[in-house]
Image: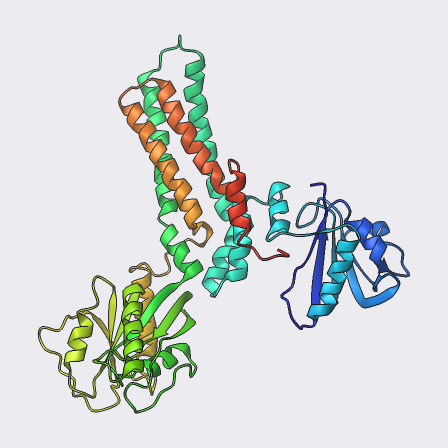
Length: 453
């Protein structure tokens, strides 16, 4: 890249420090123009050293800073990089950034530092995506998955697939180049076996897509029930904080309340809904309509049943709204006298008995949520291969092409037809790590990054 970019790489606002990152061929020239130190100019400093000095603009002191010099290629972008650690504060950091821009830098686009790291060959595309996964991780488990991807675990698995695919393709194309050599039956059988093994590996990778989505995005859980069943109290118990208002008055919650919690390493968006019954007033009616919409959109339902009261028609009508969604029936208020007797017609789902007030059964409920989310495979996630939707799409296309190649081999088709399908599959696999990626795909990926990363 011929231009030099700069941006604030720390969150905007007041803080102890802010960091302005400058990367490109003019990074040291710009630093020389704005940084003053008794030890000399940044262009003279040794690589990977940090120096105290001042930043000035037209002779006016802006701040006392620590300036780090990093020379290519041993930097994040594989270019010359200068990082200025200044005192935090929106105005202070912005003034120093403007000073860099005034002396020849260009404001970086979202994700442009990481994009340059990819384009300069320091990281591949899966590692670039892992940077944002690491920043956005909401749980330790999601953080570990992102860290594994950043280390290159997924990249190595994809490279293994590519190498095996290239080997098969090379053997087939060798026979295309020398058609006078007949293809022995055992040779064709070996191509078939190798291609089937590659498809098996791709299917294994594809099976991690759902787990990867859950780790990155979490799941949505609706807490529903009739008024005063203890929904808000249950949400507070699950969150470990008083997020919803709890009173003995039925219908206290008039609107939906959302909060994300870490449940056994899974980001879970809990939504406390208004009690579903015949509305008593316009405001409550709006809240109940919103509750029904949340119930339609959620991925898991917690139906809270009040064990201290007899069952009602409201519970039956609510159960009819489940559809095919997974449901946990939460039998709440077990610390009180039990009066709930569900009719034989009431749908029986997984159930957990809790006391939201005392905390009884809350950990068991979390275990049940975890078990349902992972579909009975708790802890089975291979953190090094939790793929995202872009990877999954490429793997599906690769698997489709390789399956077509297998069919052609089984029919003893011309090797040219097999080779064509293998090449399509090879290109699709290459997209995952960025070996065969269009500018449109890169723009879409890096547009999700924040400026300065």
